[in-house]
Length: 279
Image (tube, rainbow, N blue to C red; front, side):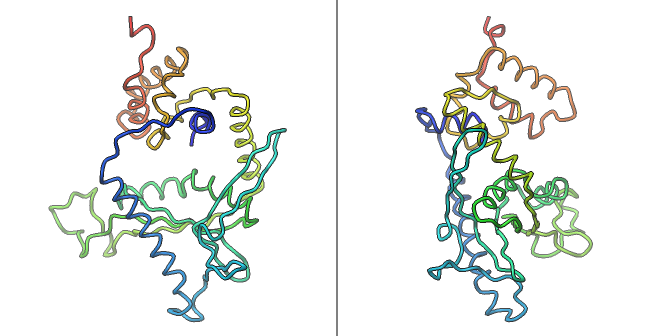
């Protein structure tokens, strides 16, 4: 969530109802089903692989597998004179060579090629690293794996030589299918933890003091699942509106025109007007 969404969610602001396309529900259901099967695979590894199973699932004190609700935890922190709570439930906790690892699983519906291109360029998503940083603070585990899976799969047989498939859509290369699974190992540092705690403390302070956080261009990249977009736009100052429109004009004349960040900003501004334009 961006700072403004956190503010509205924790104030008396009523969430907005919006139309949801049926395929989105099917997509969410698909992602849930896939992680369930991944967890079953992890449970089954010792039986399937025997001594070769390097990862096993940790168990809770009452004998449950360490998945999600079974290990859900919360803790109150204080930073800069502000108290706030963090709640987390990792997709799993793994036992590995005498130590424990956090496990998070993410599905990607953007497509096989898009997933690999983004992960090759940026690595694990910064928002996902923020999530596991929060988990590290609750569980005292500073290391783990984020596993990404594309819901689009490679062609059943090689499409390298198929002229009907554009070069940018081929799902095989060098005689092998492009990966639909990508695992990233992470290590959480004290600096990452302190940065997160300071950020959350500032978010909590603004909520307690009933101060709407200032709008930034980056926030428009988190609007897709926000239930407060209309209220957020209604609270924009004229200065914030001008800043956003100026940024959109810069995007439109740059090599980022029509790309992800530009489209997010343009969509946010679709029904926003600055005072001069209204005249």
